[in-house]
Amino acid sequence: MAFDDLYQEIILDHYRNPHNFGEIQRSCTIVEEDNPTCGDQIKLSLWVDENKTIQDIKFSGQGCAISIASASIMTETVKGKTTNEAREIADTIITTMRGEGEPDVLDEYGDLIALKGVIQFPARVKCATLAWHALEEALQKAETGE
Ligand code: FES
Image (cartoon, rainbow, N blue to C red; front, top):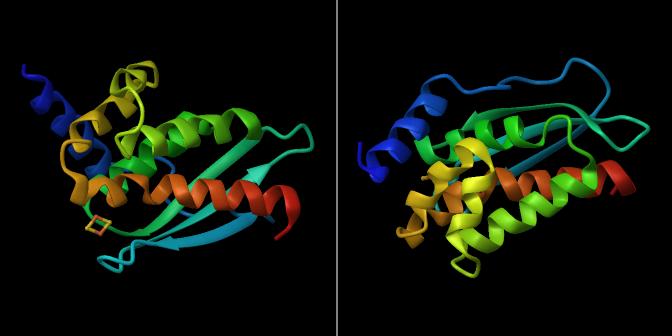
């Protein structure tokens, strides 16, 4: 199977069956982020415990296959991580998607490898980073209350 087909299959799989879709049913941090170029929006709820570990994270909203798949993969990737680890991963992903990093770094993060196929389509990069910007915002809000 060609790499592009593999990436597409992973994206469609997460789009059709998004992981961690919904809202956390307890007090938590909630943020909404939209892609101004299309109006698509995702809502993120994040529960960070007293040890700064992400106990739960869920998302909802509307978006294209890439934005929904990226959000689904994002929640899978950072659940159970500390806020610092999650922030580092978000920074790596956003930098790489902007074409400023080495794409092979995505190989280390499971299904995130599928986003490698998006880098060659600059118009879709905002779709792929929407959830990651929401995560950055939620982490900031969880830690500072702002
Ligand atoms: Fe709207 Fe992709 S087209 S997020």
